Image (cartoon, rainbow, N blue to C red; front, side, top):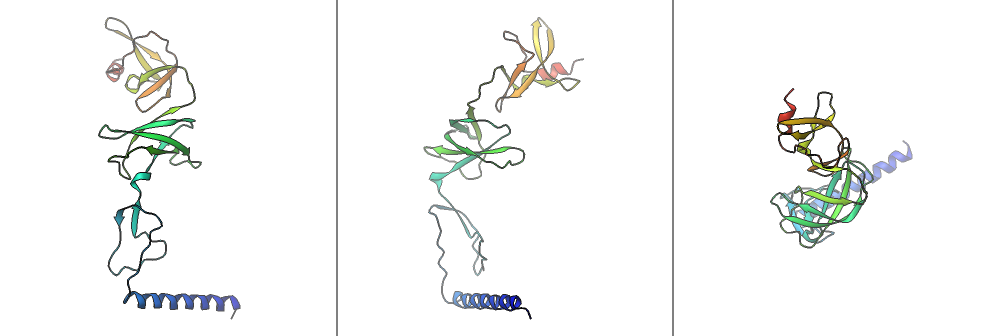
Length: 206
């Protein structure tokens, strides 16, 4: 028999003996669990008589005063320092940009923000809308997303109110601006009256 196989068998035997000794001691002595960090127990998967393998999460501990927010950006931007987070109930949080991930996730760049001040009722896993200011300057006209519709050829168009009961479609080129608005970078000049509500209904009229 090869020497390597003998050494592997000896190591396996030693590991089994240690495991049997631990099992025998567990029936008589409680096992102390020491957490590497302090905080609040968010969830527990401990079961009476459970045998946990190394690396198994028994308790999930978080620090409510050190929560971070992760957002997904579908464009590579250089963000300014301060940002804000809007919760579903309308509350807002002050955020501070900490950095961006190098590995994309679902074709998006993960961006990390720390919470400045009190986190309030924020809990792990809660969804937020993050509003961050980019340091890159772009020129164009900001429009609500509801104002832009798709034409028959797939081109982005808006409807200009020329005069009474007359709406003229204008082909434009848009870029994303934020969650509620887009930026018209060409095809539209200042001073135009653009339909921002009901543009889909006008687009159905041929």
